[in-house]
Amino acid sequence: MANQKAILVDTTRCTACRACQVACKQWNQNPGEKTENKGSYENPPSLSSYTWMRILFNEYYKDDKMTWLFTKHQCMHCDEAACVEVCPPNATTHIDYKLSDGSVLKTVQTDPNKCIGCNYCRVACPFDVPGYNQKEKGIFRCTMCFDRVTNGVAKYDIPACVKSCAPGTLSFGDRAELIAKAKLRVARLKASGYPKAHLYGETELDGLNYMYILTDEPSKYGLPNDPSVPVSVTVWKAITKPYGLVATAGLVIALVVNGVINARNRGLEDKYKLEQ
Image (cartoon, rainbow, N blue to C red; front, top):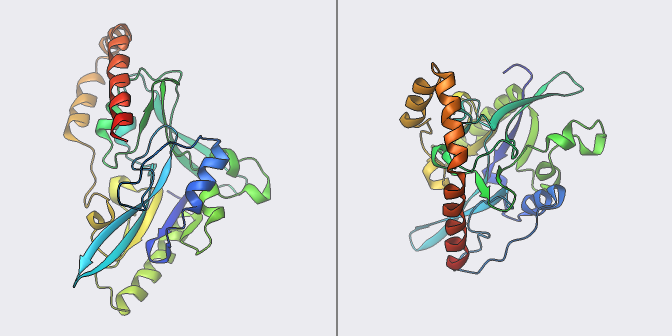
């Protein structure tokens, strides 16, 4: 991971202002979604093809006092990405962008022109990220603003969410440097009375390109304590890899039944709208 870019989220500094949510919407020109207040400041209630990141409001009570633990939720751009491994038509892949300073921005992206709407990536993702868009026929997610950081314009040399973060929760830079910075911060937090403080994402799934400074168990932040690629994904890969022709034939069959899959997806979307 030499000279690889990443984003560090220091949850201890987050005020849940959600400027990052707005910046993400603005830069990617994604429309707002109609939602309903269900007793929480958290809004919208989930990621979708139009909402690529959101702030989770994790509420906990201790001694009759409520505490919030805020989490920035979006695609983690895992080095070992279950969505990449499981995608039948290879629509979801790792795409590396070389930046002007010689570093690399490693992203996970889905080509909507190749996506068949099977939604296997949604099932496989341990972070519950991918959002299928029935109208646009594809999976859409955070891109780490590759179109900003690769265009050579100085004021756009960092992702939109990082640019908008007033309290300094988000940092963008060389992954190795961010890890060193995070470990210093964790040491200070432990010395200040947070014995569970730790860095999340350094080694999980061979390394996440979104890393987090946490003061409690990951599950308290809505993150899996030990994220892993599901066994079903490993089995799928082992079966299909030696039989390329069979896998290709399977894709043809998948395309034939795509109408059935899309009908199911429409039903899921209608159900989601009713629940809102």
